[in-house]
Length: 249
Image 1 (cartoon, helix red, strand yellow):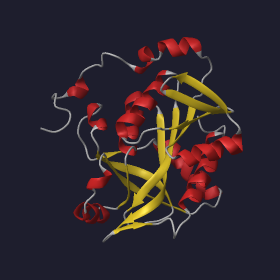
Image 2 (cartoon, one colour):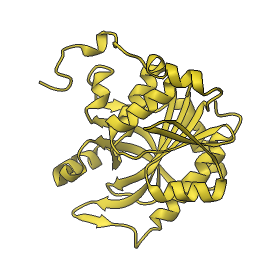
Image 3 (cartoon, helix red, strand yellow):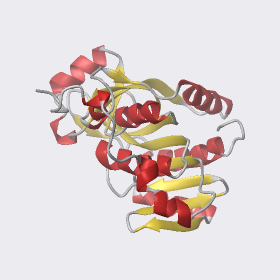
């Protein structure tokens, strides 16, 4: 039997929702951001701290955000769908409405920056929210605005689909071949779950990646061929500028 084990789970109400869970924090902290940028790499946080000098806000022992103007910056200390979705759900409970998720991804045959058009649901988290299906989609309006923003700023990127998986040490050559034929150009660990929860909670989510390695006939690190750290720092700057635009809300 597939995940979840309980049949038609998506038809039933949750016992706890984000607003309930965050009620104490909501009373303590006022005017928290509506817009958030998610990163995963520690060097991306260090870069952001040096350049933007944000205010650090410890909401709880497990939740720290950094404030730059009206934007919340979050460095995820874990990876994968369950961790990231749990954090985003808490931020939704605190009034979060717009989420831009950026990080590294494996490229199936592309390098550089990738804007995610949709993501294959090969993780377990999204299936606890909605019925089974192949793909999850980002917010169409937010993704279109991000594409226009990248074009306006003359950023070279590829727009395409990703494959979200829970197990990066179990990516097989056979899967890569199959998904490449279906038009998928990247593999990562969060987007399909984030997109699903975005739709479920009626908030806006988009994703962009920097390819850090290539999965073709064999695994190839790309750090020597493309400045992956520089690419992610560039995405941080672009993300802050994009979310700071008054048209993004």
